Length: 108
Image (tube, rainbow, N blue to C red; front, top):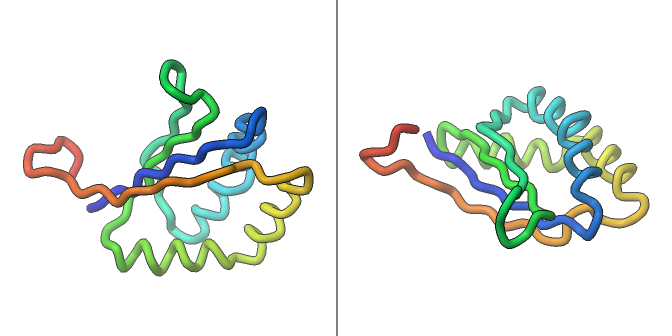
């Protein structure tokens, strides 16, 4: 099992819109594609309280490539993302890392 850590740095004032998009649109499309989220967080105390941080759980890099690529070209996703960004992008930058558990990690 591997996890993908993704950090979305939102445009000023756009975090509530991004959270709403995940809750009402994105997660339903992910479910259809078999993408499993392991958790979502916002920053209460830290450098930037405009960030959305989340983990996706993958069995392998091959699974990630197959499912993430299918999601990225999903017609419903493309349409609804465009609608939610009609007044400008919600996210300014995205960083991501593929994480491997250590031998002593409680999450494998």
